[in-house]
Amino acid sequence: MDGNLALSGRDGLHQCDVSVVLAAFNEAHCIQQELNIVCDALDASSFTYEVLVIDDGSSDETAQLVNAYDHEAVRLIRHRHNQGSGAARKTGTLAARGQYVVWSDVDLTYPNNRIPDLVQHLINVDADQVVGARDSERGTMKVLRVPAKLFIRKLACFLTGTHIPDLNSGLRVFRRAVGLRYIDLLPKGFSCVTTITLAFLCNGHSVEYIPIRYAKRAGQSKFHPLKDTYRYITQVARMVTYFEPLKVFLPMSLGLVALGAVSSGINVWRSGTMQEMDLVIGLAGFLLGALGLIADLFVQYQRKMERLIRSMKGSERNRVFEDEVHSDLR
Image (tube, rainbow, N blue to C red; front, side):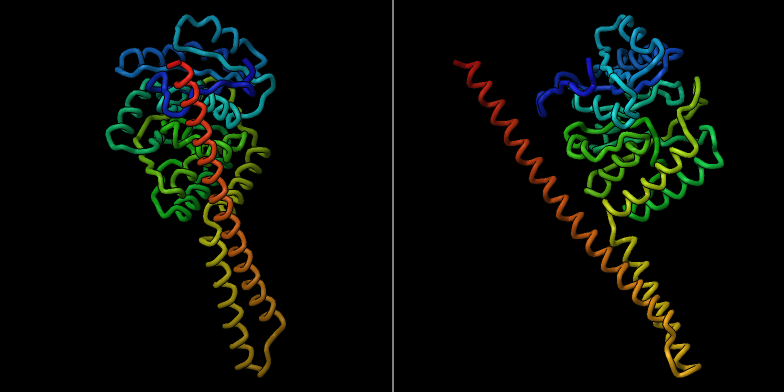
């Protein structure tokens, strides 16, 4: 099935408890082992479930191995071309029929046997999302990844005003009804996990964290030093401009205005005149503040429009459902 044509269940008409979305790209060496882990764990639980493997344009035998896997809960959805892990997770979330959606990887790094624990924890604490917080960073190119991820996590903590133990974890569960509100925000790449965490936190949804172990990856890493470092940088820009622009722009603006004022005061005291650079610094601070205000107004407007669109879509879904129910009763 083409991922662009993925089918989804109606909101409120969940056909199972849990939908596990597994994004896979050239994972033939371990896909069946991961499916064994996921299915065994959920078979031993009290949850009804489905497993959606999103083959993101693999050139190996990933899709064939998933098709050959003998378990009624496993479904395969294929992208004709590689679109990125974010696009795969988006396809799977839209196609999910469960009340709770789990995201994970299939490279043996995450303890997928703990998926029932994450779902149960979400239910127990009545959270909207539960993230598996990793105990270490075991990826390749640590000299680039670790500082970049640390900077992004610290920025996210500042923007949300909360402590975030792990912003980039690939193992998480969330309520599908809540996740669908922000599905259009998801980028196509790895930063989709960061985006959905921030979308929940910045819009008042509860996010919990439970510690998990993190193992060495099986197979070759998909991390590209130049391309993914660039994505991290653009991710920071997206975080700043979309979620809380005033929290970043306003302190910088006030700092520059204060610096310009202090500098001009010193220059007037020393020489009796202001320097051109003092005016430039002050003007830069003023313009930065104006930019922050404009960005904040745009963000507020965009959020209002998204809420309106979601409300209209919900009303349309309810109308269609009522029509179908009335038709069945005739």
